[in-house]
Amino acid sequence: MHSDTEIVVIGGGVSGLCAAGLLAKALGQDAVLTLEKSDCPGGTTGSDTQDGYICDWGSNGFLDKEPLTLEWADALGLTPRLARANQRAAKRFIYRNGILHRVKAPPGFFFSPLLSLRGRLRLCCEPLIAQKTDMAPESIYDFAARRIGPEAAEILVSAMVLGIYGGEARQLSMEHCFPRMVNMEREYGGLFKALRAIRKENPGASPMGPPGVLTTFQGGIGELPRTAATALGNRIRYNAAVAGVEQQEDGYVVRLTSGDSYAARAVVMATPANAAASCLHGLSASLADALADIPYAGLAVVCAGYDRDQIRHDLDGFGFLAPRGQGLRLLGCIWTSSLFPFEAPPDKVLLRVMYGGAPDPEAVRMDDDTLLRAMQSELHPLLGIQGAPAFVRIFRHTGGIPQYTLGHEARLAHIEAGEQAFPGLVFAGNAYRGIGLNDCVVSAHRAADKVLAHL
Ligand SMILES: Cc1cc2nc3c(=O)[nH]c(=O)nc-3n(C[C@H](O)[C@H](O)[C@H](O)COP(=O)(O)OP(=O)(O)OC[C@H]3O[C@@H](n4cnc5c(N)ncnc54)[C@H](O)[C@@H]3O)c2cc1C
Image 1 (cartoon, rainbow, N blue to C red):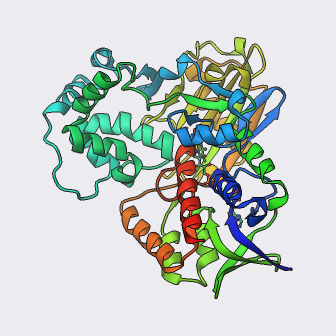
Image 2 (image 1 turned 135 degrees about the horizontal axis):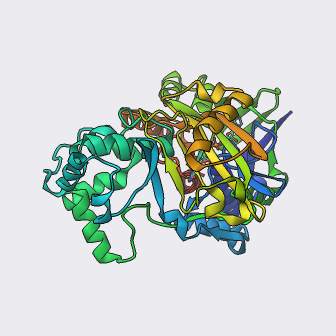
């Protein structure tokens, strides 16, 4: 089958769905066709409801600070379904020396044994550290060690980087993973100085957590891609894996592995970068190489449900992160039903435990029994859990999360040059300028704007 359409969006994750929705709104539903390799929408973002538990496959929410995400939810009629995490989300813990320590804002931080006295004193010297004047790229670890000291970099920052990116702080680029902090140093001369200034401007801002409130939907985060896909009607095709994209006089031909093909004036590539690389190899080997150069870290998510009285810990908080070198293989645990009580039945508890990431690529390949045994042996003593979980769901993301390693800027420059060289071909998704759902929405807007400008 060969058919013509104005625009083909390749990939039906949140980035592709958002871009397709924006383009359909601008040009009409029939002008846009979305092709998704799997049999359902969402990519790494989705939720399954089973036995009264709502289990998110990957992301468990977005921060409500990005107006474009809230606008998208609103356009889909989902505003009444929004559900914000409760106050407990502000309390975060880090595992060190066999126990969980609450991460406190100054001045309480100074009296917490999470870091050694020397580590705390070094952290307090941050305002005295000279500002970096050159623009040379720096790893997250190097930035943190320079500003707040090696111990805080190892314990606080590396754990956070594993929790967000599943990545290694020594390999990831500060500028691409935490551009806000780089700007804080550039604008205010240091992090404490920046926090003081930000607090002055906005007295409610919390320095211990990211700005915004973690937000989901009453049926889990999967409501967003499900509703977005439904809104596209029959203009989204599942089990439609794209094998290649070729240039032709008036645009592109998109070829599926099934043999079907579609001619389009513009193409939005919203797949993971490595999938985009294989689709575009025939078009430009150097563009494909830059895409293939973006590494990914796999993650396994264990959702475990318990009776409340099986657990001694009060679970009053967001959950905890486990820095490497502290004897735990798990990366962290989110106390999901503390944040979103409706995601577990009454008197039950839902926990989400993460394994894998860049330092532990084998974990995502562990079978269910091994993962579960590992989870029980590490988590149960820590939280005082008696007996096995009554409910378990395991999700594996072998592709996982893109890693913005040092050198990401050069890859991005190459990919953007590819967009220039092939008018009407644009990239969206978490591989480029941010992995959060909000970043994906922003990337979809960028892609839609570029396509509309091209047409
Ligand atoms: C465990 C985990 C936890 C996370 N937690 C959070 C969180 O709490 N908050 C947050 O904001 N973000 C979180 N994230 C990140 C966020 O979920 C992702 O960045 C986001 O979902 C990526 O969306 P995407 O559309 O860019 O890519 P994807 O979700 O990867 O979608 C790409 C789509 O392309 C399709 N595809 C691939 N190849 C082809 C092909 N050849 N032809 C057609 N289709 C193809 C895939 O099947 C997929 O559906 C988390 C991610 C993971 C893995």
